[in-house]
Length: 325
Image (cartoon, rainbow, N blue to C red; front, top):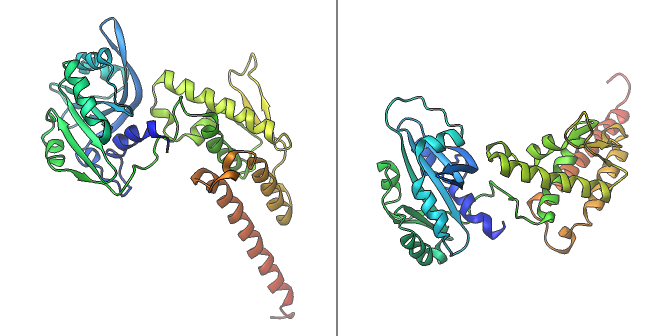
């Protein structure tokens, strides 16, 4: 995982169930309402890295994930000026409980940067909770949480099994290769369903499952990066993929599949998938141990090959059975 993505993934993991990583925010009833949400503050705006909402208490956490040690004082002051109405509007939060609403900024940083982040927040006169992410624990510093349940959950260090899960695998600052390694498996998965084409927006949602929770501007930047990755995939393997540009009647690009391995005989099907994998080998996967994105592609090919071999074995068995049995 890219280093700049560790804090935001740790923050979102705290509100995500179904993983070994602890989820005290989810346990308290919070849900993720948005990622990279621009919120109007006075004459400017602040882009909130992650917005969390607890509907039964009308509590909002506006999270800022810091991968570095420097605190932007102007940004921190804008976090201090946030109001719940603006965040509710920007993140499209549905309010079901009558009564007052409460909002609290929350900073998350790497443990080695904690002291400088605290100093920066002090200079900006922003008193808020700060969570320091370490290799084996998360510690609470700074101001107390408004939510008593969350305050109690972080009264002692929260033990974690290691780095957070890679929920957000890339952002707009990620290198092209990081997008290539997500887009190619998504293309192959779509190809395996015998579809003739896929739009770039649909491909982006498949490659980046959390795309819908991003703010509009961030979502547009990510789709543009997926679009560029799709063009590179077509350039690497023109026998399989064709990139069709936008038109006057279609405001998005499309990837057309020029051959479908599923239409070939079983042996030929595996060979076509293997040729796609060889084209993918032009990425730097071949120069180091395979990562999870490469394995997603290779695992699909291996599963198809095993299915073909099993089918061939069944046919051979049936051929050997004497008539009448």
